[in-house]
Image (cartoon, rainbow, N blue to C red):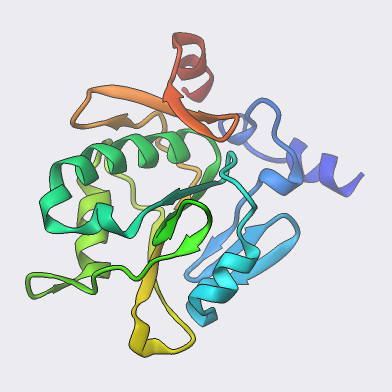
Length: 193
């Protein structure tokens, strides 16, 4: 009953198809609502983050290898960020994690691109990856328990009130469905307006 009252009180724009309380994300600086539990990613280790991640990608989680953050892969990173940021912002939000490879193995990510810290670099790349630029996201550097072994990076993207967002490089709108980011059909875009 409380769930229905909460959802019924949301503005029409925020009341998307198939939305349930477990899909609603709250974002207050570093808190993220996952299901019914608030998660503070800034206080977790990479190993603890891996433990809370689902066994495979779903509509709220996408995993990428650490190698995607290497400078030689910049164009591929730009394309992938546009696609994933567009999809999550248009589909209720989610988490993009760099440093989890196949099969669910932690990989240490680079800490800097040139002199710029990776966290700042990713924040800039996310802002530039879609049109309209999104503002409702947070980049987390999550160290390994033995911090000498590096860290992973998690980008939490909120459901955007300014949706739909288009991936800049491809000029394509995306959404999340069945654990994948796919080009959004016209009717999906109309639901977001």
